[in-house]
Amino acid sequence: MSKRKMPLRKKLLIAGAVVLAVLVLLTGAFFWYVSDYYRAEDVALAVLSGEDGITVQDDLTILSPSTPTDTAIIFYPGAKVEAQAYLPLLDQIRQTGVTCILVEMPFNMAIFDSNAAEEVMEQFPEVEHWYIAGHSMGGAMASQFAANHPDEVDGLILLGAYIYGDYSPADTLTVYGSLNQSVEDKLDYTENVVEIEGGNHAQFGNYGPQKGDAPATISAEEQQKQTVEAIEEFIGSRSAA
Image (cartoon, rainbow, N blue to C red; front, side):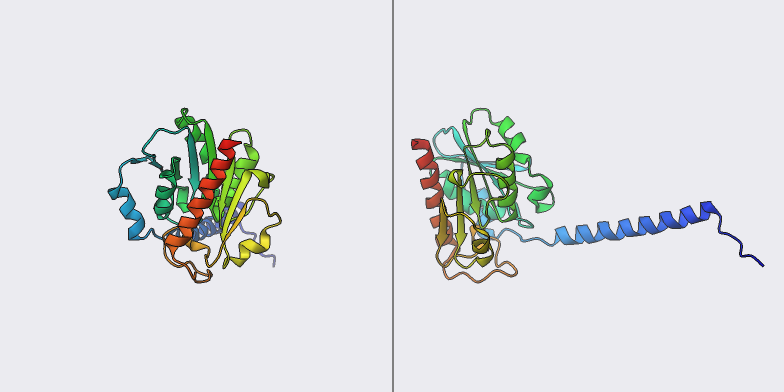
């Protein structure tokens, strides 16, 4: 006696149900993953309430220096790090006379909007000299943007990251902590590289210890101070050229 074949419609319904179940599981896993991110510490959030010259405009936080400038830095945060964690660093940079524009990324991951800088540039036509910067994955995406738009940026600034894509080390400042071995192992260039002795991966921002990161032997304040000095020197040398 032959087996009765399952109707095609029923097969399609079962297949559709399986696909839907897989999609639901994957979607749930994704949102679980991105919801577990590093929050900005109170010292970072305090910058928003305690300083003049800082404005929030949709997904941008603009930190303006006390005097007008034609130079600005667009900053991409590290993966799964709340953007506001970088406010203490950027607040110090803007005090050197450079506008800083912090981009809040979708799901706190720059990989989902690596070209965000294009829209930022359109909103600030008065800026003549653009630098794009980022930390960790944010640095990788900033590097990718610079490589794809070399005529639109004056330089690239990487923190705890290395050049990703075809962009010249001569136009790049790379800053990393001496305890961030994973970055040091990937560097295949030496030009404009600054190693901060005792620094680690996380302390470019203020979001607490990061999983897998070595404890720093210097404070976050000291690591950020040296970072600001390196950035000021890098931009200054290019402005004078």
